[in-house]
Length: 202
Image (cartoon, rainbow, N blue to C red; front, side, top):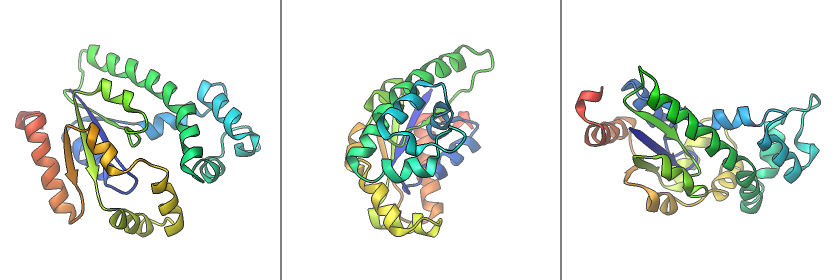
């Protein structure tokens, strides 16, 4: 079973992913996969340099993620250019990974694919058996991001570059609103797991 997990910055995807991992789900983090795709020699690397110039590169020729973020999250238009450069290759990488997991003799019962930008790249829905969206009010998300060390203006800028919760919710089979305690959130995640996967999967 493949669960696509989506949600905006600061909504609680990482907490949800850790919860599902505690249930023995295999979790694929697209941010980590994207990091690997930005290595020199990959198509995504070439596209990013074409879009944003060599100013986003470090002295050794690798992508400087801080420099890239400063330009790519400067506006929704710039963020869309980054998504277009990276996500087609990312989807091409994910599909064979899922196929290999399905064919493996000790394949996991559940695979969770973290897709923060599902609304921007809805083709990822095609790999899912079910889609779970995590939502939270923008004020709550900003507070969480600031508490984690991000400057408030950076948090607002990055959230402004993402689709609204409503766009992700429209693609989801289930929505969990994460606007209160961690205990309440994990309780909702547990209910989702039992309903979608079954109590015998833990």
